[in-house]
Figure 1 (tube, one colour):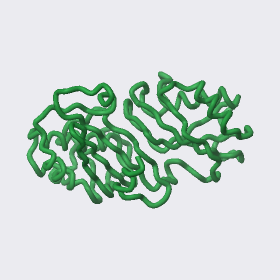
Figure 2 (figure 1 turned 45 degrees about the horizontal axis):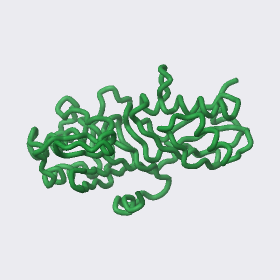
Figure 3 (figure 1 turned 45 degrees about the vertical axis):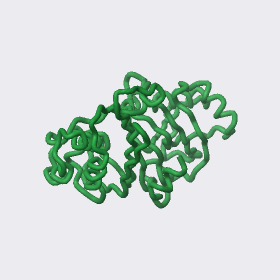
Figure 4 (figure 1 turned 120 degrees about the vertical axis):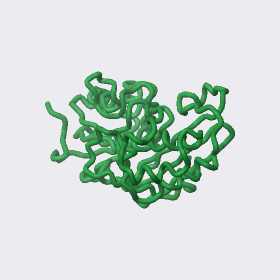
Amino acid sequence: MQPYTKHSNVPVYRVDLQYIGEAFHGWQSQPSGKGVQNHLERAFASLLKHPVQVIGASRTDTGVHAQHQVAIIRTPVTFALESWLRHLHGLLPTSIGINRITEVPKDFHPAYSSTGKAYCYRLWLGSTRSPQVAPYAWQVYPPMDIALLRQEAAAFVGTHDFTSFCAGDSSSKTKQRTIVELQIEQRGPLVEIWMIGPGFLKQMLRIMVGTLVDVATFRKAPGTVATLLGERDRRLASRTAPAQGLSLVEVFYANLPDLAELRRRQ
């Protein structure tokens, strides 16, 4: 039996979930069976007794976390929320948690219906180590100029061609993207880079952060970001920042909030 597809006249369910990315080979189904999608499809198939296709809002990379990811499934099986949650959490790894499941209109698509996403990249500054933070942050050794980090990051806001900040194997037809808002917050050694926009390219945010860190730690000159946006050459940008520092914070299906409002909800 094949999974129920978008052409099937069966109910569609939205699945809101979160996961720790360290244990998975990214969101997308992998031959290894270690994608988040693989685990969800196996769990739903076991619960519902038929093959299940899970479609997600964002293809997070290997090691990237999701505080809020959105997916859909299709099934004719009678919906029973508490029973489904209880059984799914027994079938899934503990690093995946399902927050809620709701029936949605049949034309809802987690990616195409989305109006935007918010991400946060976390840096840990200094030579001390926090075991609670380390799995979710990139440790960067001083000196780092936070004022320069903020000044350089401001160049990303707006609509630009992000070719210099996109993985070379990206299949996207256009590299033009919009950063609606970007904020940097520091609390002691923890630095959070918050970004919100309608959509992002493959590894775009991690390449952006790698370049920002190089400028703020004096490896690249101030003004590098503006130059690279014009150059449109990935080879000129910095390393891709480690995956464990990046989290998908939220997927939106209405007007984008401002970052101050979003951070108050976290």
